[in-house]
Length: 122
Image (cartoon, rainbow, N blue to C red; front, top):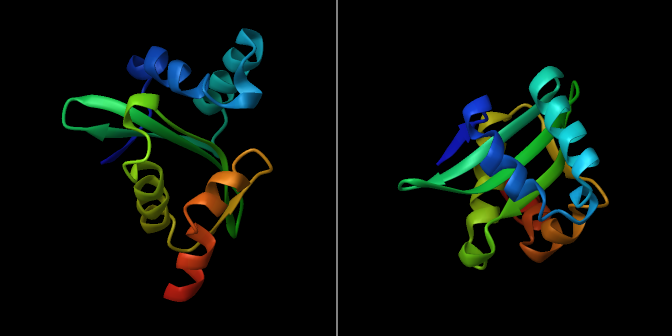
């Protein structure tokens, strides 16, 4: 289940974000977290499975687009379809927007054939 980020989840969110190749540096990671907390167009969601938070997905919103900045799943829960489920849930939340990847999330989009799945549904 996708839930909105709250400050109480900061440590787990930072841990999941640190799996992103472009978020390895602690100063960069803190800067990214600050943007999600202060910028209205930056939205961060967490994937909760039973009791645990095991994934996150972050977007920057514009009028027609939700650009996927970050997508990360706890390594012990990878290859279970969680990332794809996060994308599907995000698409439901932002039905009026097109989900697009950045250079850092494009490989994941390709891996789960999300763009192909989306185009088949349209």
